[in-house]
Image (cartoon, rainbow, N blue to C red; front, side, top):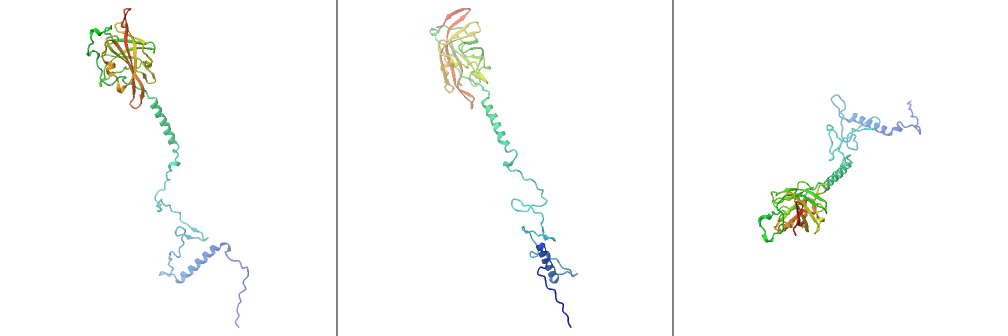
Length: 320
């Protein structure tokens, strides 16, 4: 008699092993199946041991295409991510990683640059505006013609004084009381200017003040930071008088005949330096506007005067 053992009926609610780890059980089952299949049909070496082979079909890869290993819990162990350069190429591990430089708009000094530039610009323009002004020669650049080249006729000569160098100029209307200095000609045939702003200069190649002919007196109109001796020369009008003390102890009194402002580009050389038949004088200084580019004034102020009286040893003689 053959006895058969019947299998017990399966329970309707038989617990599933690994229900909480379904993925793990599935992976283990698949691995057992692959291992069993490899034992039956896999390649073996001379010792009858299986040769492990990997291919794109049985090797697991991550989303980047790199091979991964599955541990017991079924979690993939990813290799550390490899960095790429801007062209998408992998960066070798031996290359030291350096911190990329910050862009210009994130630099800590980006806000300081415009501030520093603004301060430097303000200092530069302030210096240009307050830069000391150097007054150049207030006479024309043409060559000066000497007054003694042609002697006037004796019959035309009016009363004049003998030659004596000037010592001091006094113009009460514009509060001028200045000493004299001697002036010559420069290399370019222009008259020199006084070395100080508070004195006036007399051109030595021209007649002395009070002598027959035009005496030339030059002074500065301003200086760095303020006015100079001839700052108010333009305020004189015809009829005003002024005096000049001379080295021989005499004093020559002059009357203003005319006041002109002429352009330096069209300076009246003959009218200023040409010979005359009386004892005259020309007070010359700069005028017009100051050109910062060429550092020069645009015009000259010229006061034409003539001798009206002379005082020598307390005696006054009319020269009208």
